[in-house]
Length: 339
Image (tube, rainbow, N blue to C red; front, side, top):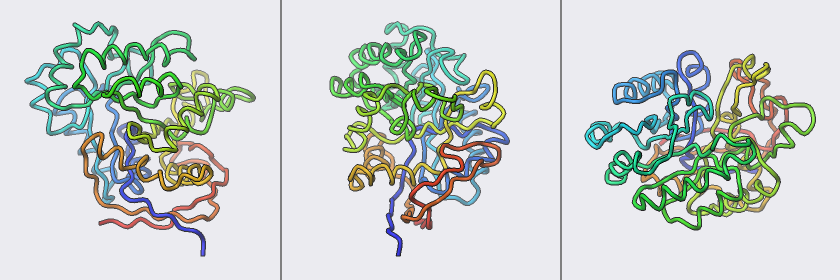
């Protein structure tokens, strides 16, 4: 019998489901194997009020059909949010996502400056209401330095708002890992692809458009720093795929769209990675336990059974090309048990 591995109530704490046709095409790829996910709000237009949150969640639930999956909804951060507004939407959201203006896909309406006093009313209200702040942490400097340059902003916010839970999203650098230890209210998500690739895999030979993402993959020593905390299931880190689907024609084109689509294979490849490093005992906390504790959520009960049997990744999922398309991975999905 092939070796089997059970994963209980896995969570993806950073997920793009898009909207419209794309939502219907790819939502089940996450909802089938994950118990829940933090859903990004950078639609066009972005999700900025209660009515839009409720409507978007309804569209997600329609798209996933009878899958057992909890979409943990977010708002697109605006400095104008006041306490009364946040109280009115508190029961509909799990966090608020802050984007620097224009720094990534559909972020043009984001924050254009990080003056603490300008942000204080909204962030103080979030602190008091226990709403976590998720941040895409990049400046608009040289592309390889953008995240490291943003660390000082993370630290300024963490110091100014010590009761605010700040999630450094999809960290890619050793500098971000080190910041985790300096501030008790800083946490982080780490993607699958940033645990596996460096910039050399993206552009060291022929350009690999389906590995191009923002923040861009960094240097080998940055990847090693990420692996060190992920494989130990450091209590302040959790899995967030940043799985970001784009149509094939938007990726294999001039002006390649940023995003790596990993949702259908994330659990299988994480199992292979953790097994390779003799760390399978740490996978449950990285993929679920830490997130439940950090966010205070209780996801739907789900058991995902993987087996050690080679699986060839499809070349596309409804027009979206996944990571490892056409390649063989070590684990296959055997079954999903709900309840």
